[in-house]
View 1 (cartoon, helix red, strand yellow):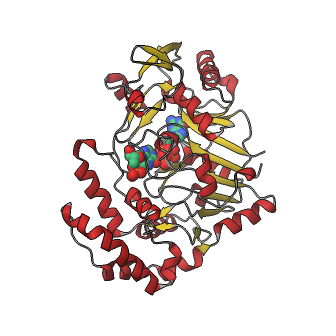
View 2 (cartoon, protein in one colour):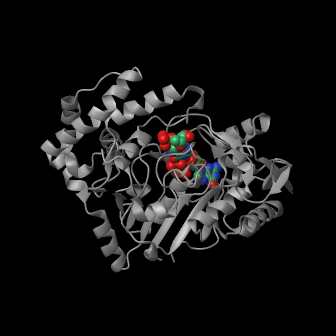
View 3 (cartoon, rainbow, N blue to C red):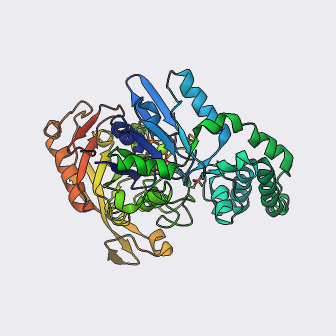
Length: 427
Ligand code: GDP
Ligand code: IMO
Ligand code: MG
């Protein structure tokens, strides 16, 4: 099965890093196609825990080539910081490839992220503050800097000056510190020699790899409900995390994709602002947060927690053309007498089965729950479906039915090995 997309099907942090790593050990390429260091993907290998932000999880698999696609925004300082940290832990990072078309996060796009959040006040998005939105805004405004610009210093200077000419009045008005174009250019040029060996034509290399029957795994950052087009706009990130983003963000056409895997927690979490129908604000939410260790990998923020939301699952399945679900963190639910599952919403007194396309209506959606019996056993050592307690099996089968997509693996712990595999995602 040569081309597999792994993506988030809720509001992020579903366990994409672990799912990608599991396939990455058998893949020739792992490609990050969207976002930047707003992501925080955790991979646990025995005693070792890795938190990857800008780098694809495939970097941990010695036989795999990790790739940063054109759809990614790259903070060069973060890139070399993350590489240095992995090097110091004995990971071979020399195989990393970066698209010449990937855009660069600059000191001024980073500054604009903070200034615009500040200006929004109580209407803020709750971004990760990494400069992601303003960098994509520059890309869409044709004011962006791409990795290839690092090799044309005069052009780079011209582009930095053009972008700053747009931004400086705004930076001033929002109370920010003016930036010198020369200092920005000098800072960016200081990375040239180190970036040069990594740069390549990613679309060309990946298409050749697929022609040769190699396995390519696409690792989504963020998630469907944070997708710029399909998420809960404006409380979203600024890239396409959905399946189509894997194609535009890498230069591989949709006809080449064999499988689209949506990663979902057995419950739901969200970081930042925005609607979240099943959110638990009281002690149940705290219980999930503590048991699930729900604190952000990137910002350390406490994640908002809630019950499984089937309309969101069905919506994600549809907009991504999902073929499989990877259900994660089932172990976290052990110890509950009963487990609510949101099966539909009540909006303005009416029962609504699907995620409404109106942002205002979604903000008013109240969950309608079905209650499933819980189980008390620790399931973290279960290796096959039959090892799970009867009620855990029933929960999985119910979630699968109501989400209208096949569940192909079940996470019962953070370690690489703590997964019940029902169906091989690469074969
Ligand atoms: P990502 O952004 O989608 O890669 O997910 P994060 O790494 O931000 O958050 C997922 C967290 O859950 C990490 O701490 C993982 O180590 C952990 N995790 C992943 N799968 C499981 C699982 O099945 N059970 C438990 N207990 N933890 C898991
Ligand atoms: P992974 O890949 C969870 C959220 C932020 C904010 C919104 C916009 O680890 O699942 P941005 O900085 O992207 O402009 O912030 O998106 N967000 C994430 N939430 N997991 C992530 O990544 C996220 N990346 C961004 O909290 O609400
Ligand atoms: Mg994460």
